[in-house]
Length: 295
Image (cartoon, rainbow, N blue to C red; front, side, top):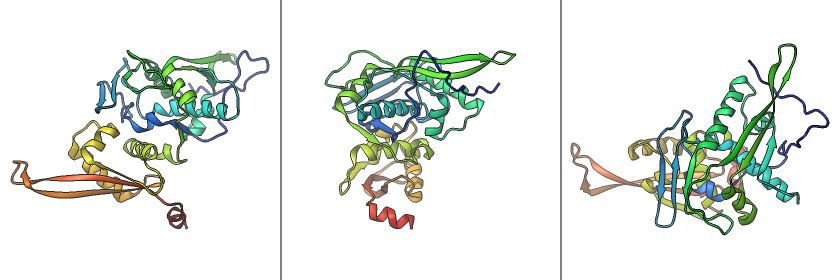
């Protein structure tokens, strides 16, 4: 059964925060670090990321870890909040919006399947457990939190058959992310084509956007970059994926290089093959170069 949104009647008991009138924006820490699974299907294994300064642990719900596609909802909410702050409006952790506007902003179709996926995504965002030492708004937290502490789909019955029709989505954003957006103000805009990218390309864009500025390059060894992207398969698989992504040059606003140097002194022990060191170099594409590419 197709569940299409109803127009909001006058005298409704709640006000909508949608439609989003500004840009899609995201909090810098969520761009820089791997909080979401790079999968369209359910990812049932825990995720972990650790450096000397940053630790992240993500535990799955019964439906798995929240994915990079579920993150679209978090970005949409963050964008609504940032727009309200820019307009001088009061903000709270509670947001009410239409699925129709969410799908329009993220480029999803408005099919019954999209509405079903929305319910699953909200459940994963509410059920996934995150623990991190990254402070937000000048405060740290011990223990786990979820991206959404509440998530509800509000329906109405209509017609002779009493079919359910989705009116609005109501969510409560977690304390950690709410503080980060409200107090730290480390919110960056996203390229309009972000939602057209694949999972790995999305993460590469986010890492580049959160760390690179025009005129400065990010140089990082491939193994470390794999961890920051959150790629769960072997390094050799990541190397193959990176070669293809570099060849396609499809990351918005950024140019990538994969620099591979044969290491003559090391032998892998596999039929005499030599190991190969590699690093990734990312530079922000100049506006002039971008304009020439479009012309």
